[in-house]
Length: 350
Image (cartoon, rainbow, N blue to C red):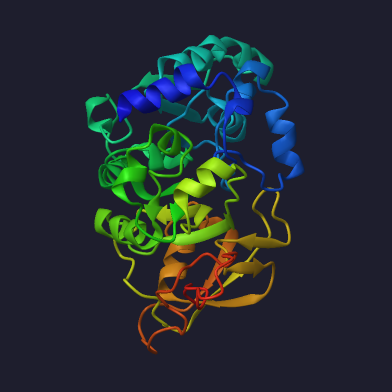
């Protein structure tokens, strides 16, 4: 499967226009500050981008970031601007042709950003075998990935390695493709479906269970949208299977509980996170308005208190009194934009 994916992204695809579906194309509305960041990136890098989401989380100044499946380097070079010259971005990819593009423009971007030293580097490797690279444990503030984990044959290992490499309180923030059911083996073996980020997609509930097994106890869904394949031949192959592009954030916080427990806590957002002066969206169900007392569960309290977000909030309460569980910790399909009329509740906590 590695060879099939390498051929697809290194030889079959010569640019974004060669994709046969829209699974690996980001069409989320892009904030203005991100557009200005991307305008500084070399055209060759941009033309070989195959992502399905926006993986630019908040509060990155000075951060050390690892990009899993960095491809031609678009996200790395965007993040290199956000972390600043004192931050650092490391990309890992297994495709020689993509790595060649990324490496070809390191010096171009250093000059474009006005840095005295380049703050990006790229390594050839497999994202499920990061232990084979010289990457220090507990050394990254953030790990990102954009529509790549579905291409890995060992997704559990990817999540396990992400946990190992993150610092305590660090975050795995990534977009990927998910399905509403497990993909039949005959579709998984189809090289085009796999290369198009469809047949390697995890069933959403299998992903949640694997994430929790790796240590990421409370995965948070940031945003999602249904994927419309727009290719009649491929649509006929996949039949009734629904696919979604979704962004999750997973925190390395061993103290998180399996469910959202109520300790009578609350937070007040100061409005000090860059580009989020009025509201900070921790995930799709936590729009936290500046200056307003916002009740939270114990897990959300820790995600804000025990991470890089702490300085931007006031915190009310502690863990001394337990009031039971927050309502709404469901197990239905979590993607609110599903077109299936039988999907049930929104599946979110708090």
